[in-house]
Length: 258
Image (cartoon, rainbow, N blue to C red):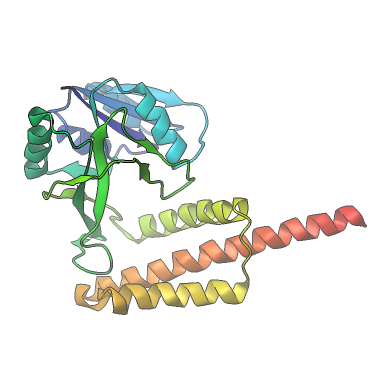
């Protein structure tokens, strides 16, 4: 049973080499890159990955489906460039594949790092992600952001962690909050959702309360507070951007009638 790993990238030269080093047990590694202007493509090729270049960006879900279509293995593992397969997780993945189990889809926990600290609460732990599956048994949703793996069978569980080395500094926090809030707002607009500035404020406050209080972010110390604030900001900007997009559409329609 062969294993293909799929990774979508853009400007990941700081991550891709260390990511690929943890994947030397795979039979095939597919990297689908979009518009990188750094050394991502060259590094990936030098590490033995099969690299393809996408000429456009359809969103995370469709881009991952493109990568999936390039895979040839019986099993597929989907990860991001800032993630690392731990030694224990590798062993469990190899065991699942060698046993030729009847279960077709597996999930495992992910440990995520925020500005240098692995978070134990704040809604980040436990963080179960479904990433290992038989190639013909699952597909990704077509979401612009926060895509999900779609499948019809009951999933199994692997208990060793995937390491997520996200957000090395506040610059990366702000960059991702901006990009993801824009994609989220666009998704809301496409779904016909209406919002307001007051709703944006309310959703932002709720995101902070949920992260810091309900999900016990206060137990993650000062960085737990910082994470709760950044979650609130990202949520606020997503709703505020959708509000402004709706307002712009309405203004254009009004101008067209005049």
